[in-house]
Picture 1 (tube, rainbow, N blue to C red):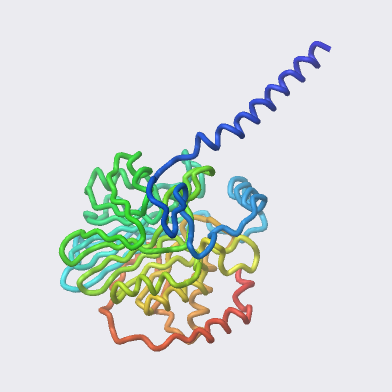
Picture 2 (cartoon, helix red, strand yellow):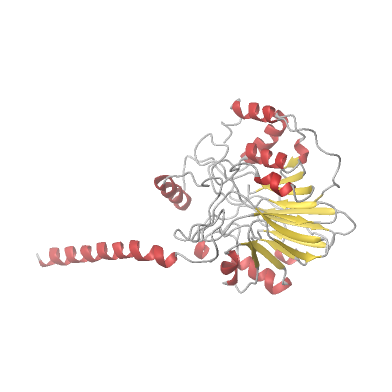
Length: 385
């Protein structure tokens, strides 16, 4: 009997400890990153998408995804354990109206133009998650950190671990002291790594030097470092104004109302854009989710920007969803061709392969939404895994 009483007593204390943990820990993990007036996308406590919520998953589905991410899912398409990458050796500077781009991997892109070196959502870590846990990269960075030219400007779209990598930001800051631009609240997270950044609201602008400036622009997403601090910091896209045509970086985003690409294009002609195409499938047949665009919506974003030369990013580096490794670029190319578009204008380039972006040319032809919609409706791409 004594052993039974001890066991029951121990079980009771376990239950009490669990209840206390479930009650206290979420508050402990919550953080206040920003305080300011209520706006069209901030309710005084948390940020929100004015065009609707970015998350469409139930708590049960979200928990299942976290379980699958941690312990695997045998029903998902196989991914390679490693993808061969030949790291590029970018030039120190690109001058005279030229523009050179190198995809480092995931949402990390090196853009060199008009004597300015720009780096987006820099991630050189092997894993993306708290305490070293999380998805592991299958492709090495397309440029070794030691091979990076001096960086002048860093754009950080939001605080998810696969976009805000504090160890990498710390290394960049200690080496180059670049201007780091992000959206409201994220500066507090970045400061925990000893890095100074400029946090701006949508529509606000900061100059790097005469003729070069950054405007923080709208996107459709959410942010969190833990479970309880959801949307305490803002998410964004960016327009970098450059003398020979602007650079647009979409960050991480769903389509939402689809109006934000045109808002960015209204700041001036976009010469080059980096647009995500991956992590869109959480159930079979999906081509988009609330917070991530797949190739169909990525083409709509590209169209809204004025059809600039564009690089497909946010695929083929970290496994975040159910689609196969090469599914996003296959669907993108197929849909561009199906809709009668030139696949070279919005393409998936290999990690580590630098390429030159031509000058802004003649105005593109009128968009054919009906053609793209027909390609989506025919269902030919749904089964690609």
